[in-house]
Image (cartoon, rainbow, N blue to C red):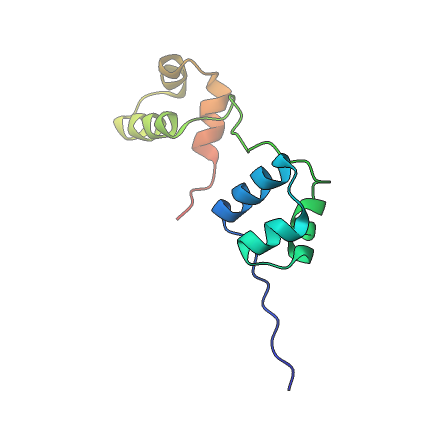
Length: 106
């Protein structure tokens, strides 16, 4: 009977160490020995982005922050208008209206 295959990737810490070692010029086998993985796993991880580390993800400055979403929620309960909420937040009324119309995640 064939053994089931489980893909075990890298933790965030392992990935960070991998990229730091790659940047310093260490080889695939040397990095693999440190992380306890075969060099083929190291290669596969690096090959996805062509050996160049991707920049970390950031939210757009145009996206509403959690504090702004919370303020909109409290203002709705208080019965304030969309325009007054937008004025208080320094945002366009359409942005606030879109946020109100978004489906809620439960």
